Length: 237
Image (cartoon, rainbow, N blue to C red; front, top):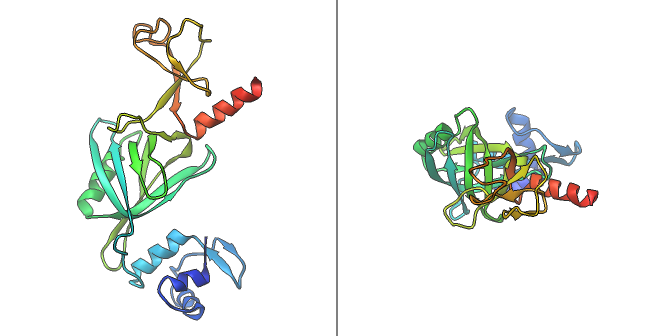
């Protein structure tokens, strides 16, 4: 959250100026907490409003997020978002959100096209300041396109937090996936097993290889869903 005084400090003005903005501009962000005297706002909403009304300009060297995205038809694209804001939910029922400024409309259109399929897009790799490499198993959507008064374009992507996980170690991107078998795994299984009850099937496994093609419940490895399953198995044990 950003207190009302923080909004003023962003552009070097006092609290009175921010109070005046709220009075004169009906589109000023609505408080999300605090009190009538000391309201609190969502920091990303305040920054977006300041940019839209040319109270601030996009800072130089504010950092970038790097995205590798794959659409449901197999097309891929690499994108960069300037001054990114990444909000990660702390439970599997929540929603993650990433927003940032794109170079031009072409990038925004390409990203929106990849995410426009029936199941959205898969974020095979996301590198953002302050966060380790993340990956998302589908359902990534572009939910907002915001243009500031100076013409800069900011986009927002969202996805269900339960689909968030880690990236593969290959360096080419891709989501770590764990498959939970419906049937009990025998000691003869040669697949790598994980605390969540999932495994990484190998081609030559007699139970989980391609020749058998068992039904597996897939989830993103290393994510919230993976940790939830691991805790459940630990409690049962």
